[in-house]
Image (tube, rainbow, N blue to C red; front, side, top):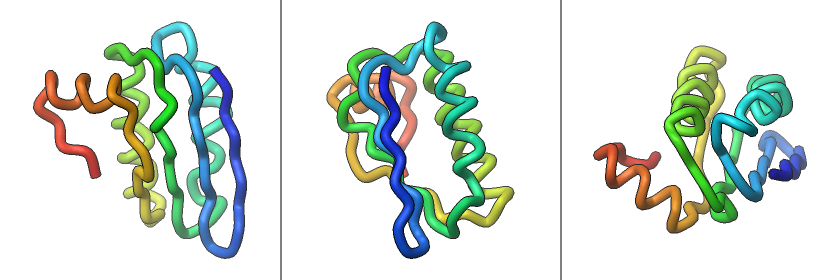
Length: 95
């Protein structure tokens, strides 16, 4: 898993490549959660997610909650087929 971050103007952009699973969420949380609040807007590019499990879904829910608490506008700019399938399976709408 790799994480690419970039901040420009009022937007922090984060791209996650690879697995979003129980094996990677701790590292991802450590890198991503501090980004929340660094800019008024946070864009997550999830188009390169190759594997996703319950722990990954939980982290995405935490990111959504923390962004809301911090008043950060969160948007998802890309969704991989794996992510779409998991969201459909859980009957969750992407925002």
